[in-house]
Image (cartoon, rainbow, N blue to C red):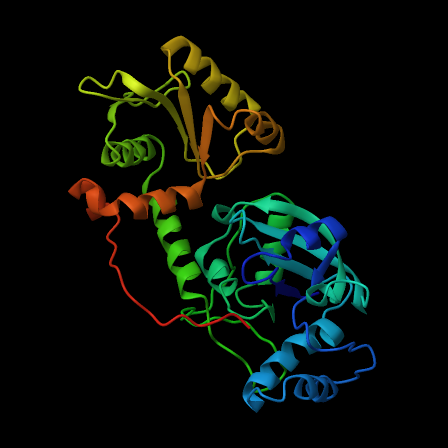
Amino acid sequence: MAAWMIRGGSAGERESWALANGVSGGGFRVVSDLSTCKSRDDVLAFVQASLAEKSLQTNRNFAAQLWALRGRIEVGDLVVMPLKLSKQIAIGRCISGYRYVAHEDSDKRHTVGVRWIRTDIPRSAFKQDLLFSLGAFMTICKIDRNDAEQRLATIAEGALDPGAELPEAGWTKTDTEVSDDSDQVDQVDIETVALDAIRIRLVETFQSHELANLVAAILRARGLTCFVSPPGPDKGIDIIAGSGPLGMDSPRIVVQCKSGANPVDINVVQRLQGAMGTTGAEQALLVTFGGVNKAAGEVLNNQQFRVKVWGADTLVEVLLEEYERLESEIQEMIPLRRIWTLATPES
């Protein structure tokens, strides 16, 4: 068995389609049906006929990705789709081989069948080396370094990433493989890799009461006055925040912080709702590294103007927005440096 990453489009435009229809693939819209192809060279001939204006190297890369979809991904293989829209990750098993669906939109014709097992896995469930592999630019590639297939299978079953038994040294270069020879491509999405590294630093550094201190620092940077509960049982309230000179003006907010890796359940949400009533708060914020489970999510969907959820990725976003206004002690715990880099389009 092998593990393959198949993206849902550079902006996530194919994600809902893939999950709803039990498929994966798409893209490469100008390339026609590959069902008759028996080798990567056959696929390359189709690609060159469709993309004659592209360089031979580019077409070889496209052909390697399409040959993976057409001839290398097997029934039983794992399929991993990083989700652009939710910042989560979906994992499934391939249940049928390549099929060209002529009646579909041109961007959704090259497919394999997938039984999606989990579609809302937080990135905090993955260790950094595995996230680095999932940061490759390619639309389709094999993920096989550091026991990736076994680890992904474990995560699909609901557990956290156990890590590699014998991690390979020097994982600063991605292991993504798109072909059987030297046409391997080693580009990674630098932004995704950088954000994953920051998120992992937050998860490792801000556990338990330290997470409340970080969130309070961010809220202070946004102009709110915060009272942080002391360490110990908090009865559903880690932070009380408000505006005005005394912190008593609107918006009045109660905050609950959960630093565990597992999704929080409906009981946490209900306690937070109760805390709103007992404190006279108008809004609530739930900060959770592990996200929320399905039952909690259904309740929160009806509370969108009263309860906001910050998962690990959202916490990274707001941290970057307010970083230059944060207290120096927080900045020292998360030392960041702004850089500029050339943008590389996704294949």
